[in-house]
Length: 303
Length: 303
Image 1 (tube, helix red, strand yellow):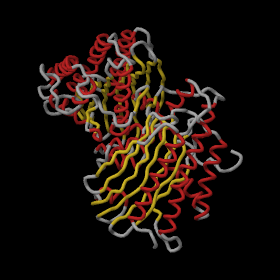
Image 2 (image 1 turned 60 degrees about the vertical axis):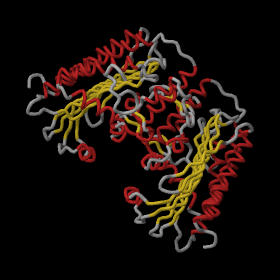
Image 3 (image 1 turned 45 degrees about the vertical axis):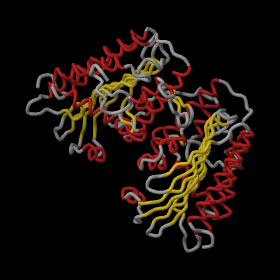
Image 4 (image 1 turned 90 degrees about the horizontal axis):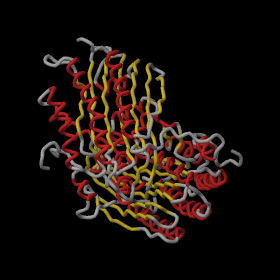
């Protein structure tokens, strides 16, 4: 498997972090990413890069990490792997723009290896518009589908469903946003090499800045006022609920005594919980909430 | 055991809800509590009472519930009880004032019964000042200690420690606030009747409005500006982290498909997560953060 060793993968992820930060900062036009290097006691470390109070972006993080060491048995059990040592590398991104007209976005791409020999890729991209624009939702899903289709005819359907199920706020009976794709444990099989899996993950990774810089540009000048900011606070509150109650990466990080600020950089700069919010019948707020459900075929022309 | 049956307890809690709402609304001076009645599919229901955008209070809830039915085996296991049916009643309160100079407060008093015969009381009060005032902290803890001391010489030390351990944000290595008392599974023993336990819980319940109306009055006119509001947003963010990541009542509620808005009424109206906040050396913010730790003897004169 040419070029698919942990070091090559880790290096590629590091380069992806550089690329994405450059593209995002240049589109934002004002902000720069501030870097913090951190080391993990048990082995490895990372580069946290944060942009705050910029032009379009209120708070965003593009984190790269490469960690390794002894796999706690509790986590090995939860993951259903038997290896004693592990190696994990990846890039995690969350962007919170000021404007309620620019969507929140999240991406993660990661590679995991255990000493028993298992190796796999995981990751995903999902979009959380405050107000859903169906055309932009279609474009977003079609781009994901294009990349998926290039690799396997089942990828998009499978990974889109997986995202619907994963990014779901069970206690609200709402999806977090319009989903996207989510995948995990993509190992080598008889038909698909680990190198093919890596190629797919690379293309997902490279799609990020293309998708998001466009969304930033298209939406940054749409006017909004106080009602939109209030709805944004509510939708950001739901984002907090998802991340703190359901997100496995967040739970894994907090359970393993990870660096709290790096893990929780995904939380919005501000959020709100007005009691028992009900949107006005027929409003754009209601239209969005009605669409926060599983199984919407966003990539299709008519929704 | 005179007057200690589930109906008497439940009635008393209902009366406590009335009493507290009256006292709080009258001290606030503007707000009224809006009531929503709800029924639980498996049996029972409750009265949610919410005050919003009042004079001193931005968002607060005083919830009474009495629920019963079949105990899900998963929950029976977690609770380590063998009963098939359960009965639970209690009052839960969280108050979020507008002013960062008025503390957030929480109280819960509850009674639980399982058909295998076990019966117990649980509950607690804890205070989360945005800025810690050591004199007010001492008064708060002394009042709790007085009530505890009237019932058992060990209660305060034991329940204060329990609160320190319970209201702890592990990933921040910070307590939620200045603690208070927390207790659970207070059953009848050879020396203490269930009626004595109930008497203790009643006195804890009756202490709430005495403590909080005083704190509202003492602090409502203290001036503050933007820096204090920003620090309040951060401290409210920590409150959200505790409630969504660690609080057992919240988890129990969400896991058992409880009414999300009633469970999450505990969340603040607004919260913020500025990245990697560091207080200025020697500031009041730093002084407060330094005191967010276990084992502070708040009731003592010198801290």
